[in-house]
Structure formats: structure tokens, C-alpha cells
Amino acid sequence: MAGFPILTDDAVYAQFNYETVVDAMRDAFAERAAGTLEAPPRWYVNAGAGELVFTVGAATGPTNASGFRVYGNYPDTGDEQTQLVAVFDATSGAFEGLLVGHATGGLRTGGIGGVAIDALAPADSATLGVLGSGFQARTQVGAACAVREFEEVLVYSPTVESRTTFAETVGEDVDLPVRAVDDSKSVVHAADVLVCATNSETPVFDPAWLEPGMHVTTIGPRFEDAHELPLEVVDRADVIATDSLPQVDDYDRSYIASGTDRERMVELATVLETPDLGRTSDDEVTLFCSVGLAGTEVVLGRRFLEEFV
Amino acid sequence: MAGFPILTDDAVYAQFNYETVVDAMRDAFAERAAGTLEAPPRWYVNAGAGELVFTVGAATGPTNASGFRVYGNYPDTGDEQTQLVAVFDATSGAFEGLLVGHATGGLRTGGIGGVAIDALAPADSATLGVLGSGFQARTQVGAACAVREFEEVLVYSPTVESRTTFAETVGEDVDLPVRAVDDSKSVVHAADVLVCATNSETPVFDPAWLEPGMHVTTIGPRFEDAHELPLEVVDRADVIATDSLPQVDDYDRSYIASGTDRERMVELATVLETPDLGRTSDDEVTLFCSVGLAGTEVVLGRRFLEEFV
Picture 1 (tube, rainbow over the protein chains, first blue to last red):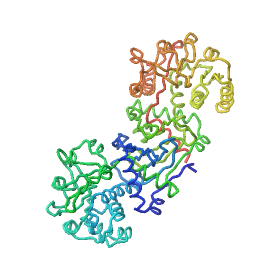
Picture 2 (spheres, rainbow over the protein chains, first blue to last red):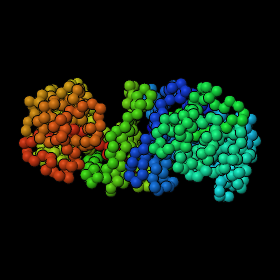
Picture 3 (cartoon, rainbow over the protein chains, first blue to last red):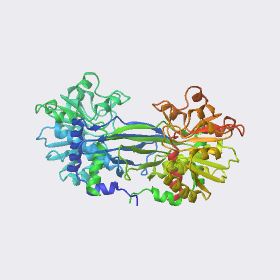
Picture 4 (cartoon, rainbow over the protein chains, first blue to last red):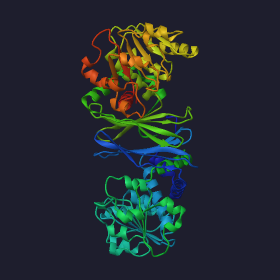
């Protein structure tokens, strides 16, 4: 026996729901707004053929959890690679448990996306559009459907089998019609909320397709020299929010929002506290740039340990 | 089931021996000498009421392991605080397992001390003296007795019960007479090899007691404004070795070896490769300043996982 709780992906996936994930992320952003979320930028350390990436954080308010997530970036990939999330009591330093696998990291990104959509998208958003069909796209849809009463989800990704499988799988997650379509234009045209969660380093849709009132979230590449989003969307957005400005500024590449666009950027925690900094009319375009707020994995890991052990 | 091996202190203590620990540390220093041990200084991150301390490292030669040790520094102390050592394959990034508890960190410090004594102390050292009676003192004695045929171990620490218990416990570890004595002078006078492993911030012996030929190891406080060792010992030592010069230089406090003494310091790995940089006669005084070489926990953790799982 290890003497402390360990949660694997199997245990998390068997027990979690997106409402809880989004709720935990709300707690994290409330601590961020209150100044009690310690969230330094990621730390990259060369270690052998690759690097280890640490995000350390602490929520020292009501959550009272500190800890970190670590994963490896190695040229090889394989099932034996995994992530660890370690949770400690932020006051006593007591070790509270470990989460092993990709679930916690992925779900917290989804949960953050859910909080962003709830804060920024029109209340009556009916159609969720998704470009991309991977793990990140899946958690974004799950969390989005926990904060809005969508009528339908449309997904496009270039490979027929990927988008078809995604539609089937995610349809079971969210208990809504999820439809795979043959072109990105149909997705963007229909979408009230558009989630881009691809690996593409070139824009995945035409900015002319954008319509007033849309909320757009970008999860994939977001640099000036590699971006899934058309740069025109950044300029056009009335609100540009992110989960972590320190992380935006810590990248060693130019971010998609530079110059005056960077100056306009606002943290999601600030929008939650001061809603006037978010959407102020139904025809504004809002944009959420997800970069990863440290400490959120620890807050979600703590919640999972509390509920599932 | 966690899906990967976990070793607790109970499992390590039930199966380890000091010969293996010292052998693993020899491997680590061989990689250090060959330039294949990545060992950046420790990283301290504020996290709640305390801080998390990470040592990340990789042995990319024959050991092929990367990973880290993490522990918390919190004002509270308690049994629920622990350390983690995570081991990855340095080439593929595959997660290989976790060691939970204080054993791996403590034993690797002992093992490093053993390698240092083997490299620096006279071959015919007969008496091992120990000032201090804590966990660090215990692992130093265990590892020292794996590299020299001592006839006797003498221990002093201020509390009678502590030193008496230490003598009994460690006597079982090393199968040698271990004797608690009533004053530090008797220990230093008799010692061929002297290990200081206290928490004292003032010198624990009189430098006049030092005799030609002695080897001294210091594990406790080692700063100009807080040191268990008399500063005269640093000046007098013919050889001043350490496990990690980058770590010596990374402290934000002045180290006990400054100025020309700092310039004379040599890494243990270098001494192992070029023995002339170590002891060159039986009457020289040698000093080993243990600071903690990153990557060594990962090398030892890998060995334990290989042998005990």
C-alpha cells in the first residue's frame, strides 16, 4: 500500500461529471480574483532526450491546496508517458494524494473553457461549433454543455473517421445531438460559440465567416508564427480574455495578441469580478485564449481526491 | 491499482543495503564526470504557507533515468509531510515509478557521503566519529561502513537519550561496536573520519582538536553566518570537495568556503576521475561539503525500482 490516495484516469473517468469540473474551476478563478491563487509560469527543465514541464501553484483561500502538475515532452511518444498531479495541504504541507494520467490536466483545461464560455458567450447560445476532434476538443465540449443549454453541437476535422467517432463519443458525453459535418464553413456559420482545438499552425477558418455575437475559444497553437485562429479574429474581437496574463507574457515566442491587442487582454478572473470588462452587448465578438493557469490542476485534483477516494 | 510501481519507505528499508546505495551513487558520479548527469540547482516555489522544493535531474549515460525529487518546506511539521521521487526513462519519457517517503532522499545523501569518504579518507581509517544523532547521521554511518573497515564508531550528541538510542540502532545497521560518548572532544580525538551531521548553527567542536590525516564531512548548516564546522577547518583542509559546485554557488547566502577557499573547491566527480586532486598523503586533512547533487535521487530511485519491484 502506498499510504496515500492515488487516482488513475480510470477512476476519474468513471466518477467525474463536467458540472463538478466547471465548479472547481470557478473556485480557482474566485481565488485568482481574490489574490489567493499563486500561479507562476510553467518551468521547463531539460532532462535527458526531452524535458520535464512543471506547473506549480497554490490556492491559499478556501481551497487550501498547493502542489504541481508535471509531464514530459519527449521526442518519443507512447502509452507509458503520463502526467502526475500532486496535491498538498497549503497550510500544513501534508501530502494529500496523487493523480496519475491525463484526465486531470485535460479536464481542467475543459473546465477553464467552460468558465470562459459561461462568462463571455451570449446566454441564449444555441449551437456549439467545434473545429478539432482530439482529447482537448472533447473536454471543451463537455464543459461548454455544462454551462449553456445548447441545442446542437457541430464538429469538423479533416479526417472523416475522426470527426465521426468524435460525434458518436461526445454525443454520449453530453446527451445532445452531436453532428459531424463535411466542412469548417458550416460549423462556423452555424456556431454561436466556436471552439478551436486543433494542432494546426495555419488558420482553420476564414475570418469573413465570423458573425456578430459569436464567442470564440482557441486552445491550439496561438503564436504569431503558428496559429489555428485567423489573426483578423484577434483584431476584431471586442473582448480578448485569457486565463493567465503572466503565462502569455512568459512564452519565448510572440503571442497572437501583440501590441494594442495585448494591452486589451484581460484575465478571466477579472471579468468574473467585473462583468463590464466582458461582453456588454449581444453583437460583440468575444475571444478566449486558453494558456493554462497554474494551480488549477491542483484545485481540480483536490476536488477529485475529496470526492472519489 | 496505480498501474505503475510505487515504493514506500517500508519497502525500501526492508530491502536495501548500503553497498547498493553507495554503488548507485558511484554510477551517478561516473555520469557526472562523463558529463552525462544533468543537475541544475534546486528550484524553490512559494506554495501556500510554505514552499515546494524541486531537484530535477537526469543521468543520460548508462543509467538512462530522468526525474525529480520534491518536498515541502512548511512551518508545520508532521507525519503527513513526505517527499516524492519520480523516475522516468530519460530517452523515451516513459514513467517508471514513484518513491514516496524520506528513505530515498536520505539514503542518497548517505551514499554520496560514502563515496566521498572512499575517495578522500585514508585507506586504513579505523575509527569513525559522528557528531549528531539524527536521520542524516545514521545514513552517513551506514554508507561510511560500506566503504571502510572501521573498528569502531563513536557518537556524541547533546542529549544522552538521543546518542544512546543512536548507538543501539546504528550498531544493528552496521554490525560494529557503536559507542555513545559524553563529550565531542573524545569523538574528534579518536576519529580518523569525522562526520558532522547536526542542526547546529555554531561550531560543534574546537578546531584545535583536528589532527593531521583526518577526513571531515559536513552535512549540517554550512553558511558563513551559520555553520556546524569551525571555519578554521575549512582554511586548514588541504582538499575541499563538494558534490555540486553549481549548488554551492546558487545559495543566496555566503557559503562557508569563500574567496580562495571557494577557488580551491573541487567536485567529488573530478576527484574520482583525477585522484591527484584528492588526498595525496596520509597527513593531509580532507573536507567534504555535502550540498546535494541533483539527479542522484533519480539514479538511486531507479536502482530501487529495478531491484525491489
